[in-house]
Amino acid sequence: MFKKILIANRGEIAVRIIRACKEWGISTVAVHSDVDSDSMHVRLADESVCIGSHQPQNSYLNIPSLMSAVELTGAEAIHPGYGFLSENANFAEIVNKHGIKFIGPSPEMIRNMGNKIEAKKIAKINGLPVIEGSDGGVNSIAEAKKICDQIGYPILLKAAGGGGGKGMKIVEKSAQLEDSFLNARLEAKKYFGNDELYIEKFFKNPRHIEVQILSGNNHTIHLYERDCSVQRRHQKLIEETPSPVLKKETRKDLLNKTVKMIEKIGYEGAGTVEFIYEDGKFYFLEMNTRIQVEHPVTEVVTGVDIVKEQIYIAHSGKTALNQNDIETRGHAIECRINAENPSKNFQPSPGIINICHQPSGFRTRVDGSIFQGCKITPYYDSLICKLICHGRNRTEAIQRVQRSLDEFVLEGITTTIDLHKKILKHKKFLNSDFDVNWLDQEKFYQTL
Image (tube, rainbow, N blue to C red; front, side):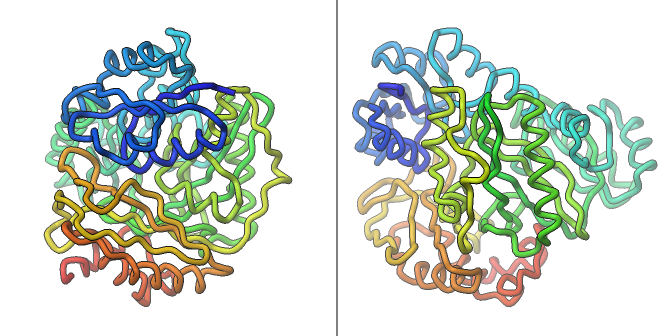
């Protein structure tokens, strides 16, 4: 096994990786910006290196600084976590060329699956149903109009080089196409440095379902699916497993087809294949070639430590698990706790947490990096921790989340805790009668 791993990330995911490394007996190196010197991940790691100032491009996105930290500490591998450089093929290439192991798939795989257009082609060739739309990038408004007229409105303009709702525009009718196309290109260029767009048929009432996989050069297994349909502006807020809307036959078909595709393309590592699901049918959306924020819900129902398995695959090239080893038990729900003010358009809420009481108890887990006195800065993603609760069934899981949210006390900053309380008591959530557009349509978070 590796003797020392550098974690090229911060916050809760860096803490999560450090914990997995400690259980493997692996020494850890935390990197940090100047404002993160007192952070939890720095405190827990065996060594730490300051790699620059608070601006991400000067620290967590600074490849020369990260490689210098590797050389300085003698780390054998880099775990990128999620976000930042986790799906940057150039970074993975540089890491591997220096004889350091990048804990993730090959640079070529990251590059292919990271481009939404290329990923869609790969999925289609390898047996997954895909959403009707353009076969590749769309370079002009005239070309876009022709495709939209063929598949019919409404359509979705999407950035080829990114996700998270950036560079994404819904177009209801032809008269809106030109302005939406130009705005989407500008946004895509701003956030991803790539203004290439593609077009897909827009689904009005879809669910968002994803399949967790672990794959080595010996075989691929799945860890079942997650339902991530509680979203605001295409950003996930609550995830759960199993999906309460999938029928047994559909689930089996979805999982089998996903595993077959991953095996055919020769993927190695942990990954997630995401789908749109509507009217009993599923369609490939994209693939994330990294660990996901919501991986804990899968862990608690399967009993598999996904991060430890990810490290094992990176070291050995193989997955130690067989599909027959994977059994699910009960139901799990995760709430993302963000330092944001939902009543003010989810405005970030930096500050110092002066009172911090986190819930605990039977089948209750909190993944985070917060503590009393810690400073939440405005420079990074607003996710500060995740509450994960496990129950014998969905009803019990919901009850446990509600109890845990009531126990959560964070003072000094505004968070999404009250929003989660409201969602978890809503009739539509209790009945699983919602889709990815539910929160934005109801806008009940504005009344908090």
